[in-house]
Image 1 (tube, rainbow, N blue to C red):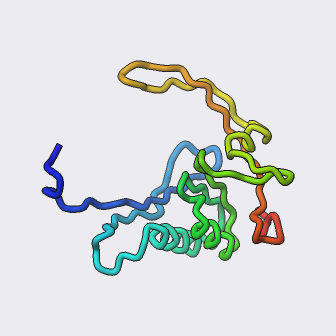
Image 2 (spheres, one colour):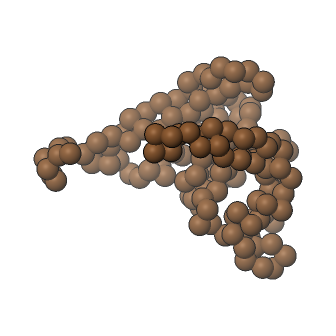
Length: 154
């Protein structure tokens, strides 16, 4: 542990990797280190949008982008929609959706969708192995300010 203010600001990273369906390997497509104190820095959202734009241009918009938590920000979602890209976003737990006029948590909404993957995994927690049950599914959603559910047929 260092003394506060003794170390210079660190760097963030924005990485994009690609893979083929049923292929065990990953291909690095984009990787950039950036600093919030560097000249010309605009925002983390701008860095993410830059990565999305470059990769989608180079891949001719093929594939489905998968964004981790944080990709559910309005500025990121609107950028992806505006560019007619196919995407899946892992929503943060504190986000809410409206279902049939009722506000509900993302966790509650996800539990209503089909669970396509279900498996027990071993997780390391405080130096000990712990078995956790993992279920993954998806839910197609519509944004209130958009007329269509899907702008692009994936």
